[in-house]
Length: 185
Image 1 (spheres, rainbow, N blue to C red):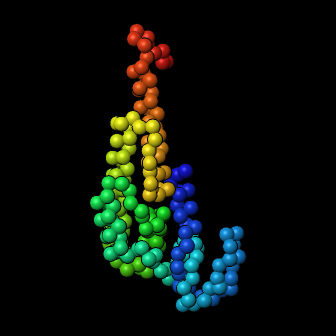
Image 2: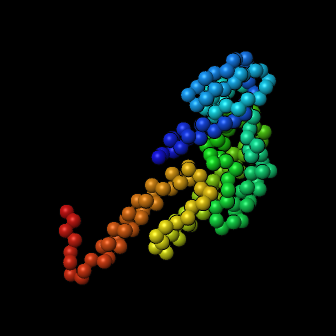
Image 3: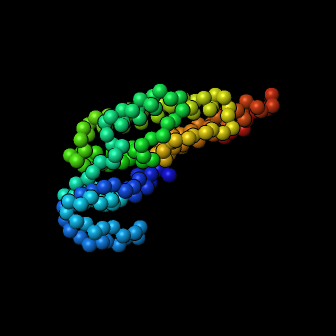
C-alpha cells in the first residue's frame, strides 16, 4: 500500500461541517448524508468536506483533538515515553495535511497546529528508526508495533523489508562453507 492509498482511506473519516446551503438527503454507496441545512453542523466524509469547502459551500469545524494545547500534551507525552503512545486519530497526519491545505482559514492557530503535528510525526519517525535498528541488531524474529498508524507503517515498511532482505543475503553469504565461491554472474 502506498501513501496515496492510505490518504484515500483517510478521506473516509467523518468531519463536521457547517453548510451554507440547503439540500435534502443524498444517497451514496457508503450511506445517506444530510439533510444539509444552513448553519446546522453535519458530519460528512473528509473527501466531501474538502470538496464543499473548495466550492465555498461550507465551513469546516476542526476535530476536537486539533487544538494547540491538546496537541502539545500528545507531543510531550510521545517524547517522554519509550514506546509509541496512542495518537489522537488513526489518520492524524493525513487529516491535518488535508484540513490545513484546504481549510486553514477555519482552523484557529493553524500554523502552530501544523508545527505540533510535524513535531509529533518527527518524534514517532525517530522512534521507529531506533526500534528498527534495535530489531535488526538484536536479530529478533518478530516485533511489536502498537499504536502505529497505517501511514507510519507504510512509510517505513518497504524500506525495512528491503533492509531485512539484504541482511538475510549477507548472513547467508557469511555462512557459506570455507573454500566455496559464489558464482554470481
